[in-house]
Length: 94
Image (cartoon, rainbow, N blue to C red; front, side, top):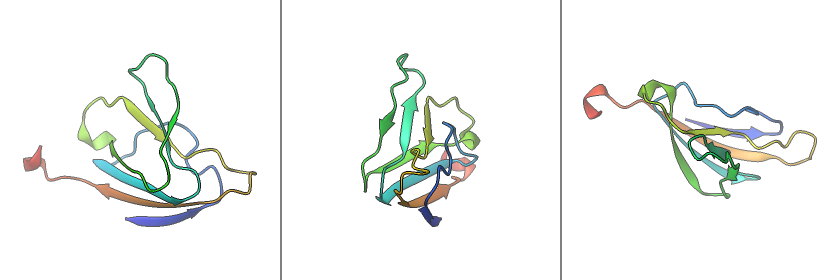
């Protein structure tokens, strides 16, 4: 778990994290951006402040359609306060 003060384009490319699940929320500044790669139009969506996203990570061993990134803020003067909780569930829960 980490609470991070972000002032740059921390994770600027859309990706899946090397974890089982990721819970993410933004307390200050622009929220995490995400795309649904299976939707065909690849529109960029953005979480609102205080919304919580639960994202499948690479360790789940499944093809996931949702990719996410930090919103581009470098050079804008904006900052973010982001809480991230990574969870790897025991295999008997799968």
